[in-house]
Image (cartoon, rainbow, N blue to C red; front, side, top):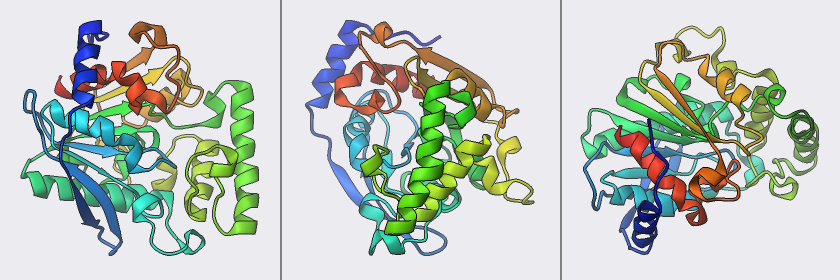
Length: 304
């Protein structure tokens, strides 16, 4: 059982946030030739642990996670964080011309990032810490055996039907109606204007909406495609954290995701903000320095 961090552990977290941990800008080349931009942070203290591949949520840039990544390095982990194709530093050319898909974020980008981290650190296996969509796509990775453990934060299938009713209806309207309309006029998904994070390539946003409507998340990318669906092959432990005030990663949507990994040992922690002295956590705030009280929980899950 993971313990809620005490006030003393929160104080030590705050102290480390002020420390400067050097990072290295790196380029990750995917099998299809697409080049991704990332940052590699060497372990700088703490009890040595396996390297960590930090996989991002949809519509969020790597810079949002950098302070947390530096904190993880202080806990004894080498850390790699990167932008998916079509977003942040990995976007090349006009966004409207980008042909990236959400499936490629798993089948190409996460695969290449995992291989890069294994080769750079010479570790046989690494840890995967995924935020939202970053932890949804393990079943798309042919090199999944290189992952020793998964820690998912606000990870779920994002299924509209598993969200609170009103929130689910609004989300369906945004992803299935307004974003496609925006794509028709702009050539890309105007997510920022709708409060959905960074603007996205058209195909990424359309697939995002399709997966959330169908349920089952990334299984929709490989269903009935022989040799490319690895969901039932996943056997490493999976630990999922989600907040009681998160309307996206709910008890039902988390279960909808995890049912596709029947062979994997699973633990689920539903955290109430008051448990760590916070007023709210929601879907995104886990990685803000203002919410560093939750970081020792994530660190402990990686070490366990």
